[in-house]
Image (cartoon, rainbow, N blue to C red; front, side, top):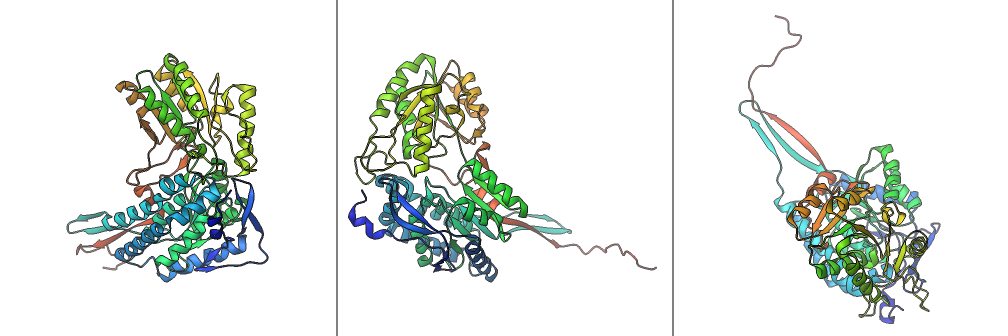
Length: 500
């Protein structure tokens, strides 16, 4: 149950356009559900094409007016610092709203997810203060200078597993480089981001620069992808949705930045520190209920240590405490939505039919009506199994037995995804082989993913990404480069058409 003292924070979610909360009586209302009980706790006004058009026109007007794009670096940094102050002041409120929507434990929202908001704005406040551009000089000929201008109006779309933290990183980058935006997260998880957009305006972000809309992908998402005034879309979410956005956006040649799905291989070799690898393997797949694109969902364990490792892994998995996200003893809460819950059940059945189910696989029996699913593990005979190929996006690990690092690398690459890879080994040659030959945007050697460093690129190969997150990727995506040439020559020019 949601503690009574938190229910006063619940409100219906409306579009925020040009700094105003918009009430559209004719628009559809969507239920906002608390996944811990399945109860409707608020409603959402769905932004149809007309509402998205209003938001886009407001963003374009703010862009054309220069109210944000023409601010100096120091003025932008001052607003960013105020955003950081307000976020820290309201972090407990935001964490409660995030947990109500996502089912994440309150501890995880408060200490792992939402601190990323301040971190993103702090990083970009520093980055734009140190950013320099290129110039070239040919003495007696020309001075060439590169400058950057905002891309324009951008669509920012975040997913349900970290709706506010992911959106905040996109907002910070878009605003750092002077853009205006239309913002959307999953219709299942709008509460905390709604409050955060209010805080952005309180911090001094001008009206029309950040416009918040929400709704289903086929309604609100399509309207963003189709709108001719939106010049680029930064999207975090599923690969199938990304393809749909890309198809729609291609009609107006939108620039795309997409961080997508993964089926990351976690390779466990005999030379590793087995207990540390065990701790990390559990963290990599079961943190946030496995609802993370970089989850180490395929565990490739060497035959020499497979029996011991898998036995210990399953014993620990069975002991993970899944329960009320507001109970401090819970390590995981419910899945974020009913669709995820149903999807996990279907994969549990698939494991019984086409693999060996080791633990979990069925919903937890509770009287709450919530979407509680236990840590689950199975072992497959081949990487061709659907459990090894499809992104399950839940607390579901699949083991494969390997006999060499070369075999593990081959299996790791046998996937349409290529986001993250993990290897646990104290053999230098094995670590180097994995780092060089696994087709993934990030390889982690003897460490789980502890956080993302915005100084460095994050993204994937193949169908896991288009573009890169991080400072340089953001700078490339959110700006247009312009080269200006100043003549320094006094040499006479050819006189076409002149008559001697």
